[in-house]
Length: 600
Image 1 (cartoon, rainbow, N blue to C red):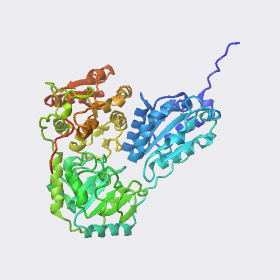
Image 2 (cartoon, helix red, strand yellow):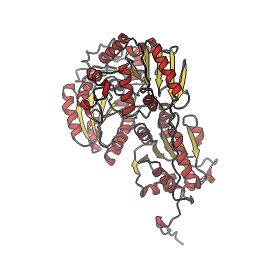
Image 3 (cartoon, rainbow, N blue to C red):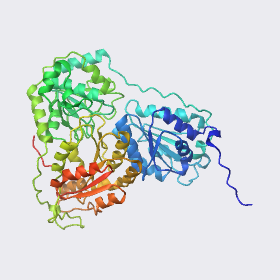
Image 4 (cartoon, rainbow, N blue to C red):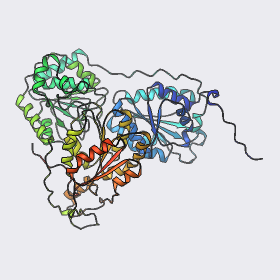
């Protein structure tokens, strides 16, 4: 007798399954999008999403899905959600979990698993969820009880957002998902603690500021708001206290006091008794740059010379301290919502508090620090010089420009190239004040990090752990999360093609951004290290690239090649006006590794 397919069951008549309850709880938690590559191991969740107000963003690779979820968490404060299947799918998503963990960004990864009865038998695509993710996630949990589905989701959201934020991985066996869950309403979302400092702790810090001659503030972490960032910068400017940002946390505070994102540049200066000072400082302020890779020498000197360093939301970690070598012995105050994880060196006062909230309490305290005004002024002047674009000089020939080695040569010949510093100068004029900038990892990121100012919170998505391939997925997520904001991604040719296929996701889901693909035909960061350590022996770093503009057009996106920075402004305007995800293919001299060095 031939097999007869069962009659489909009306979803309204089915008892609520665990898979559907997961979706219902995500709705209660305020999740608006999930990113993923579909898999047969979580079909019931996909069925639950069919009638859900949550948008399902279908990506082209699990790494892209994970990076989009990470970007959503970075930009909104609510954990971004990715869904992937077992084994190979989970392996592809691992890069985003590692990034979220080292970057302290809230994220949830759902991983479809084999049926419970098949465990331990080397079933198709079986793997050990905890063994894989246990060392790089805040929590790993497997849903074995269908009635616990809502609770597991609620607790995972809570863990991802609490204390030091990070990723949570939830395993969902395919057979458990279809079992009755016994509930239709989910559970109440758990309140996320935002600890505030005690008055005694604030007074102690004020006394430290009053004793210091060269106090320094370093900001970082997540959930900075326009109010907390602006209030800190007004307070720091009034007291001549320089403010630095942690690596790739440049959007924590506004880089100048001349713009108010909500009210515009004019009204943004109307704030009572500080009005006169801020008018004098329009376009300036206390922000003096960033630490970590690509930092200016003046920023490193500030870390060395400060007699009090206050870390707000960021520990003194590896990259920030130039490999655990700078600022370790100065008087140190650490303000973090959890413990001192990742911090190295001295701690004189630890305050367990949510840094943006702590700032709003601190600025109300009466303080009269006698700071070194000349030190402060020199830092601000050095920062302005360092971040002001100037035309690049012609690069000097290097030993690796010849034809030695394994064919990894830089042969620029007579080709026309784009001066990326000039491109940044145009973007400084063209971009809206609240534009979101994204990039991955590589030497291409040195230019936007140095030259593009941030004036609004949630305006930067870039991997603090140095993961390549994040820029384009982050641009997709940024456009979907903030459809009214301009989004620009700066991508290296190597970084771009690691997840460039997500341009198809952008076209399919209506995400709009401009991606600048910097094509120098090599993995430039590694080539730079080779030039210093193994001069004249380039190896394993050459790239063969497509016509990126034609490639973009084949997806239905806008694509244009730019070979001269003189042509960039109009090309950028055409790309922006297209209303499509756009790729501008910028040909860069392969001998150029970084912006011109400026001694400050």
